[in-house]
Image (cartoon, rainbow, N blue to C red; front, side, top):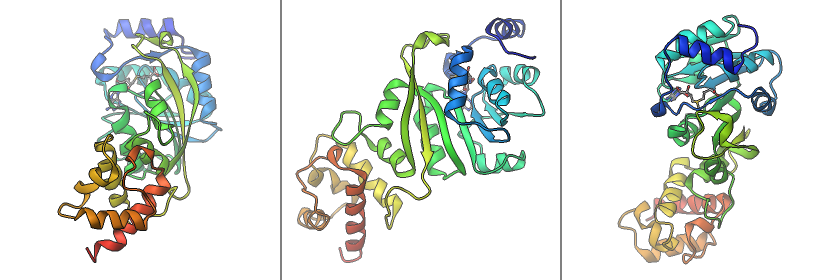
Length: 288
Ligand code: SAM
């Protein structure tokens, strides 16, 4: 198919007896200008390797190939696979049926001849937005940037600052690995079918080095999760679960060493402060 238009795709979907599945978060995009803005946000240049999560009916994929990208598209819905293979140019797109949370993206891209680091571009299925982002970050995949459509609330959470209501453990995880910014807002009526919320296109740029240096990354995020697990509690009360049996006086000493007031709440701490605390605590661990 040459240029993909909404009427052509809808006709093909109908012919193949396709029904939108809410359970797979299927809200498709057909607006060419919007799709082009997403692709521009990823600064695609000819020859770029791109992973697309959930290509749906291939509209975004098609614009990615027009910009010269070589695309690996991972789609869970078996009903969409023959449609994608019919619409998209075989020499530029490899369509894989699978669950993005279950594949090894570095291995798959290598097997399919894509170069590293690659870019990730997606209109994400909203029911698993956070697991997908966390999975990609924690597996430390070889991506350089992600340009992803997410619900507006998620975009706000991922780009928020300490002390705001949106600031949470996931904000800090994203900040640790990436610089994040909202590229633009997308009104719900541009999707088919329209979801109940507006969306945003988010840019996550992988840092060359994590934003903070810590002795033990797992331990840093254990502290972060404990601090946000009980948001309304002071650090002194919320962090007890990190090391069961630890006396409050000792925890207070560790917080003192890190220069952090135990009466503060976790949601007021910056990533740098959490890192200082994690390092001070780690150092003391052997003597506690
Ligand atoms: N990219 C298309 C577009 O913009 O029109 C579709 C986007 S739609 C919001 C999300 C897509 O992700 C759907 O095609 C859905 O079937 C697919 N999907 C849902 N869960 C998935 C998973 N775990 N792994 C891969 N694809 C998934």
